[in-house]
Image 1 (tube, rainbow over the protein chains, first blue to last red):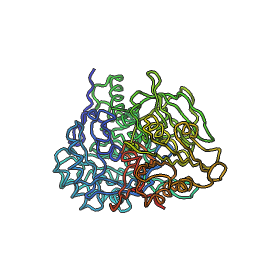
Image 2: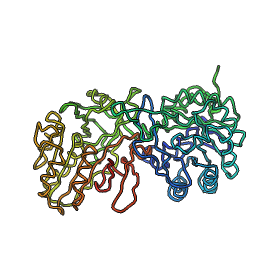
Image 3: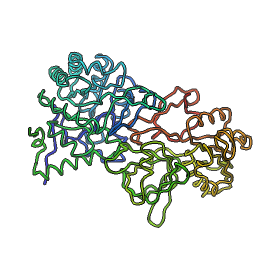
Image 4: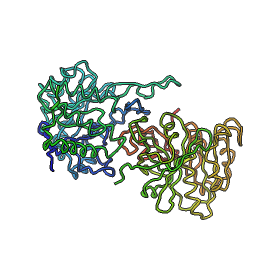
Length: 304
Length: 270
């Protein structure tokens, strides 16, 4: 009756393959009243920078066909307040804690990685080299194989924790970036981040977002994410975490079949705050129904 | 634990042009709602709209073992249009009650409500709440609308309030001009230390009210509306800029720190 759901992501051990994606789950405690957090494989916290960031002025979000655009602009409390005020709560719950980090220079990334690597209760780092929302930010790192490798190597050099690098889909060939990041020492990859998009108010002839462009997420991007995960799994040998438009267990299972070792649930958390637990239950039920007793016997079993 | 929950439409009708009153049968936990709080509502199934929509609570009441939540809304886009087509028995998913509601004064002589259009919804709930607990409190409502066809929520307010003053933009009913102009006319009637003012409406109206009250010491709380994806403080989509007296400006979440704020703290922009 029991199925084995545990996975290992480049040294990060998870009791099940379902994580909550950065920027969609706050610092975990926001969701405490809505689901049993202890069921989750991991919580990836809101992206952290060296100093607090206020983010972009509103309006920051707009609904689109089967998705949404956001230009929150990486608002966050900063790494110090995270450790003092947010981490103590996360230490009291079971899921692995993955600290998502970003910076505007390699030095920024290194400093944040160093601080978090020494913090008790952080289990892995996820390096955002891809967020398209900040004009001076991640985009340059994530879309250039050399820069992506450079920042990966620098973070790896100062971190005792597993390092996951989160890739942007806003590139010509994601496998090229993936290979470069793997060669630089990344322990795992997560993909995809949001796709850059925009939306216009035709009455006023202005963009719906104050920042003009934003990141597209939700089921609209799932086919793109799945294709990129599949291509990347075939291009590298480190574990890949599938992210992008996962709304339910069957979406998550598609990513696992394509070869993702784990998945992250993002925008779906906004629509149904307890969806991550429904997805865990749904994967378990699928394994039972298909007489699979270990999730590894499902991962990467796509028949072509 | 209060995860999103299934609910069914008990009734729905168009009260005035483009304004719908929907009654939803909800779990008993919604009885704890206080005026100014809101709920996130989404349609079941894979049809648009994709995101949930926030609605102020218009009223909560119980009948036997059943709890009913009323929402009163104006059709402004895809989401509200889809909701307006729902009929008795249709399924919804609701989450709440959410956010920080109005502060209710322990004792005050006069409560003044200033509503712009569908902004009447949370104020009517507040009036109902305060009206049930009478300690000689007088509730006066200033109700603004575009024209006489769209004066929303009047019937209920007339039953609860000691006076309802109406303004319309086109002068087709009551005072001709913005509701803030109507309130300005009567402002002298309200003693500063025993009057609490509550308001909800379009941003330009709230900005006007803020200017009017600039040198008045009386309490004025406003309920703000903003686009939001989650309603529980995670998406950071609904921020508003606050600048309390002397303090540095900061962005706060309408869903979590609000939707009710002191009118003096809010930066309404130009």
